[in-house]
Image (tube, rainbow, N blue to C red; front, side, top):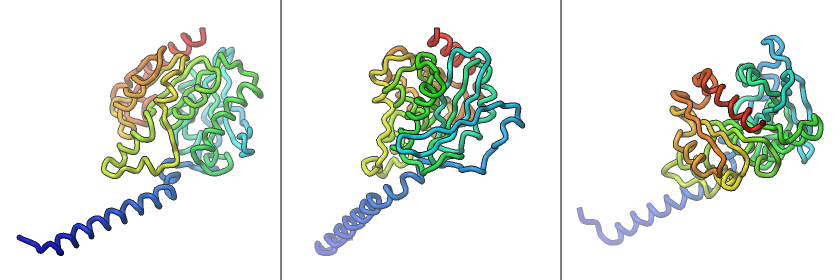
Length: 282
């Protein structure tokens, strides 16, 4: 059906104005809700705060981020340990939700230090990209300065979003090795996965770029990813590995999703971790 020129023009103008409205809403709303989308903390008293009842002996640790925010962690010692895993957990829950995983990781014979970022668990404050970066550095500093752990015996272990902060710490500090599990390449790539039609990345304040951090990182790296990861696609784990400098190793966690890696992976998964720890700390 033929429409007069002025009607065609009005339709095009209406479409253009609608597009401007949508883009304007994106620009305004994304910064307001960004932290709520990225971070999903569970605060004390929610959680499982009696690890001894599960046979897990921990040392309660309190330390401060550079801006004075008070943070909480658990230090889990291992008899005659020569290495320490500094664990940067993912974006949801708190450290108590990793109790079962800690029990299994204890079989590796390393000390384990897991901490809660600001706004998680018993830690003060509210989560945000800059704050979590500061908290991650503070956790490393506590191990080295207060616990007198030698940097060359520290293995940085980041899972999911925690992999970004583990990589940041690795880029600015000495460590024996870096383990990244179920971690993405960059927030640009993740935003495309979450919103393939709407370009939200340019409006995000967070600038997570794990690939860039690994590009020239000389320490040994182990990158693991579940082949059935439903949150961070397996291909992003592979792309992260491809972007990393040598020395590096990739391990497929066959059949694993995002949150069941240590269960689905079984003995082969833990053997891979143990072999890497032994090789890097020798």
